[in-house]
Image (cartoon, rainbow, N blue to C red; front, side, top):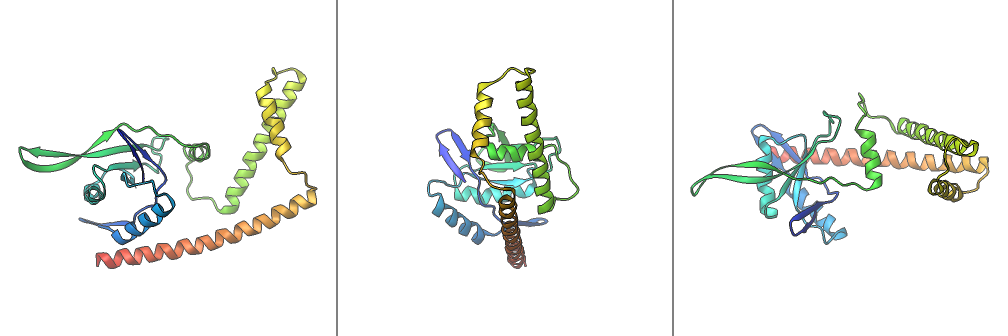
Length: 235
């Protein structure tokens, strides 16, 4: 999903379509695709289909899926996202389909890479930078993720303490912009007693754990329903 501004295509976060490959066939859940498209455009009426994305690289089945999206939009763009960070970076590439023909006879279609400018908002950039250098055997649990976030927060607070001490002792030249930013950040913190802060954190943690549990159940049910629906279409 995205917008088409003359010669520039802008991609935005989009719902994923469900597909399955059983060599040499490729199955695409068209009903699911249309339902997700309809729901997405109710919230974002100005966004239209500009292409499709997949993880990994261009494969033989990509041409079949691209043919489907060619019926949805003229000259769709195919994005590939390397989620394994093989080179230390998420290799995101954009392709268009170019027809190879001999006279009036079309022989095949070839994916040709086109220029891509990757831009992210600050929150997305933070998550992207965390993922790039990290290689783990398994995804951390919710509590492990929260523990890692708190450790990073404490490390940042220590950096601020060190900077302030260095400025006070005259080891570092003061920067008015940084000073105002620290002052505004401290002023924005609520003034709570330790007991009230602990109670607020515990209540918020319990609510968050309950929400994560319910979302996990919902995600499992949706995944099972999608697999059953895809298997039924293949059979």
